[in-house]
Structure formats: C-alpha cells, structure tokens
Length: 552
Image (cartoon, rainbow, N blue to C red; front, side, top):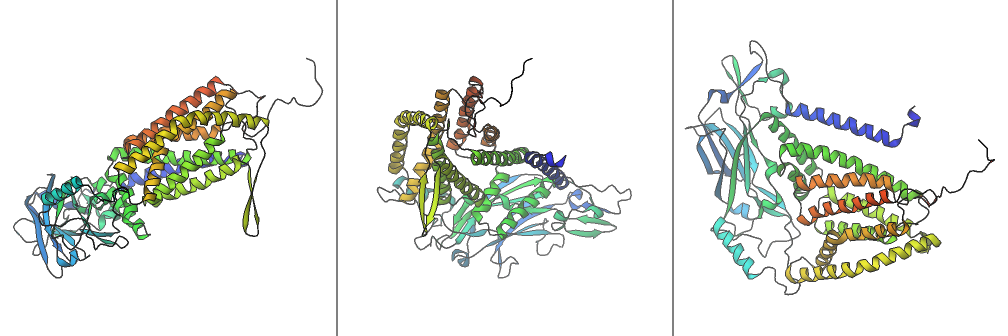
C-alpha cells in the first residue's frame, strides 16, 4: 500500500500535520491556564488588583546600568494602566552618543510620590534608543548631478526646524557610506498587561517568567505589573542618522495596555527576530519580518499564516510539476519559446533589482534559485548542448522539425505585433525616470527601468502563448498541473495584495495575472483535448494498438 502512495500525497500529508501542529503550538502560546486552587495557596495575585497609584518615569543613560549618570526625559505622574497615550519629547544627546555612540532608555513603573531608585516595588526595563546600520547611499539626478532639488532642501530644513530646533539632522559630509553608523530610534512603545490574571505557580509560562517580579504580602504572593518594551515597532523607515550636529532628536513615546495572550505571542515573535539577528541577519533583514507583525492586524496575521502555508505548499507542488514537465519534454510544438526567454530575462532582472536594493535574504535567495531554473528551461527550449573543450564551453543548438517551425512562425508573428506597443512604453518610461527621478548610479537607473517594464508590461509576454494556442486550436501542449498550482498561488497573491503593504504597481500586477489565467481556462474549454495532436511530452496517441481485430 505504501509503495503506491504518490510523492504529492506524502507532501500534502506532511503539510496537514505541520499546520495542525502549528495551530496547537499557537494555542499553547496564547492560552494560559488560570489558577483555580480552592484555597489559593498556589495562586500569584496581581499588584494592580489593589488599584495602586502609579507613576511612569523614563530616563536616558550611556550605560544600561545607569553608571555615569542618568537624565529624566519624561514622567507621567497620574499613570493609568488602562489609558492609551502618545507623547513626543525632545531628547538631548550626549557628546559620546553624537560621536557614533549609544544611548539607553531606563523605563520605570513605580508608586507615585516615590523616586524609582527608592521604591522596592518598582519594575523597570532597559531599551536601546540607538542602533548601528550602514547609511543608505544618496540618490542623485543623473542628468544635473544634484542630490536634492531646492524645494526638497527647503522641506527638509523645515522638518528639522519643526521636529528638532537645534539639530543639524541628516548625514554629514564626513559620514562613511560603507561603515555602520549610529541611528536614532524615533519610537519607544511600551505595554503593560491590563488583565488581573491569577497565575498558578505550577503552570507559570516560561516566556512570562523573566518579566515577572514577585514579592510576599503576608501569606499571598503578589506579582508587580508586567512591563514590556515592544521592539518590533522599531522599523528601519523610522531611523534617523546621528551625527556630530544632532544636539536634540525627537522621541515618540507610545503606551497601550495589552492582553496576556498577545504579550506571550509578542515575546515569542520578538525572540525569533532576535535569534535571526544572532545568526547574521542585519537590521534591514529583520525589518522585513517585523513588518509582517507590526503592519498587520492580529486576525489578518492569523489569516496570513494560513495563506502563507498554502502558498508554500502550492509553490512546492508547482515547482515539482514544472521541473518534471520540462525534464521529460522533447518537443517545443505549441510552446512559445519567446515566452520562455522572456520569463528567464524577467526573473534575472528582478533578482538583480532585489540585489541592488539590498533586499532581505528571505526574498533574494528564492529569486536567485528561480533565475537558475529559468536559465535551465531556456537550455531545454532551445535544445542547447554545452561541451567543454580545454576549459572553454562550446554550444550546440538542436534542429527543429516542421511542427516546431510552424509554432515558431506563430510565436514570431505575435512578438512582432506586441513589439509595436511594448518597446515605446518601456523606452518612454525609462526616459521619464531619467529626467524626473533620482538614482544611486546609472546601473541603478538601468535596473529600475528594466524592472518597472517587467512589472508594468510583463504580462504582455504571456500573450504570445495565447496567440499560439489560438493558431493551433489546442492547449494540450501546456503543463496544466503546474499551471493549476500556480493559479492557486495567483489567487493567494490576491489575498496578500490586501493584507501586506506593497507598492500599487505590484498590487496591480497580482490582479493582471488573474485575467491572463482566465483566458487560458477559456481556451482549455474552447479547445478540448485531441489525442491525434502531440501532447506536452512530444507523444501522439493517434497510433492504433497492434493486433488482430475482433468482431462483436
């Protein structure tokens, strides 16, 4: 029985087990068993249940243990745990911080009227207000050579005057583009668990344990407010480069209460991002992952998980069937070689664009693998054989039969009509970008122009295959299994287009593929399978089986 089980069935079975296991793990994270002891001997009661008068105080220091002094930057005297607020304060930067140093924030929640240094029932956390990152290269106009227009300069100066009266702001001329420099985190997000939850000492979650401070009050064990600093809200787009002229910089302090389940989930996600950084992920790489959690509603986040899981499954199945299809393919009858060449070119352009933009490795590596596969498809489509003689490659191209030459004629005719529309649009867009936009280099302009053409007009290169199908009145030569899985992924991308923040052009690119695939489905219905034609493996079923004929 097990020998007859297909590989696809095994993969789907493993996928189902993985999803169920992940759901169970997530349930264990967000659900905490409350204390239900009759006498309450094992219960840890919340300090907030007594409705104490609290105060929030935030200090800055050069060391996380406040050695060398500290400065009070903000205090909320009548601090209400359940009241959400946001404050903007200007923070003075010490000379060491301005000279590529660091600065820490010491956050205290303590009893009102008592300094945090003398309150035995205070809770505090330390957060880093600076981080090191390689500054982004300046973008210039390739024609005039100016890095900013006069209007942009005035706007930037106005922002500095409004947000920071004494700061110079921005990167100075002495900053080195290839060395990490200190950047200011403009947001500090704080949370406290507002639930009066009773913990059971025997079932105390390990993730909450390091945030829990407990003291003895008579016979009862009481835990102090659960204070949490949300590091996931610190995004790369909010960072400001620090230089020697940055005397003061604005800091947005945000506070909101949080449920225990959400706190535990946030702790796990924050630890996961920290682990990735320990494995060598840069601040920019980690920021890609942070955006999934910060910019998305919690319910959308759960939907994103399931959507991403199915996307991964269909990606694998489409990859498996696509490789199998091209591995067995012997004839290019009915297949548009121009479309294969275009897919190869477009995937390489997108990979170079992602590499130029220093995109996360999570995106860059799959794009690189996809480019290699598309190059292999071109080798199969053009029947290229590579021979090595004396360390130099020699290329041998295979010959096409009559049916393949007829397909090639239709393909060339479709590309001729398509070029009348495509080339002027791409050239016009590149010239417009050169005049009105700014880039790091000529190479950056070239790659951006090419990738914009791929995103904007790439779907037009799917049309030659539709034209070939129309001329041959057949779709039997297409890899329909791989098409089906890719179609599912196309509709999943439509869901992602609403959930995940992305450029409008990329969002529209998700929906344009739907239209083309619907036309493919219409052609499949219009041209039913004819077994006298050559199928996707170069085989025809028009031969009658050999043997004696029988009369009924």
